Length: 143
Image (cartoon, rainbow, N blue to C red; front, side):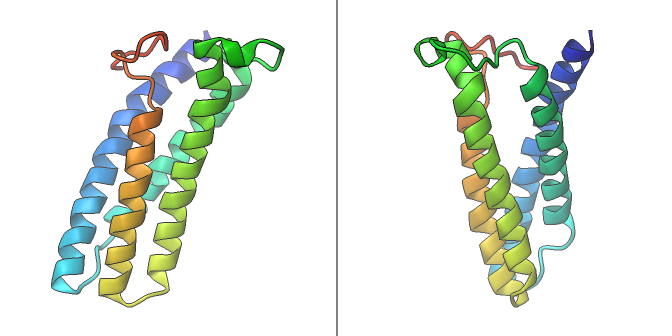
């Protein structure tokens, strides 16, 4: 029961994270072009990404799809959730966090440019790592 509630929350929060990342990337691009600060939107996006990471880490340790036994790498579903999903998502969280932290140490336009590129790279990794319904064998869903 707890697993299913947490799984739905993690799946639903994906849309909030994607929307905030897109908004932050757009705000950073506009700020970069006008040589100003991107405001608080990148902070909100990073906070949502971190919340998603927290839910994902809890799920990782209670999921029936995560196993540490022989033969996991031969099974597409188990390999995806045990290795691929978490690896790419952790890298995406690191990119978003590093982009935000390094941007805070720079001038407004340079910081906005850094947020734009790091958040864009993080977003692309997240999009690749999501178990979308059209990806065969991953039991993904839209919500």
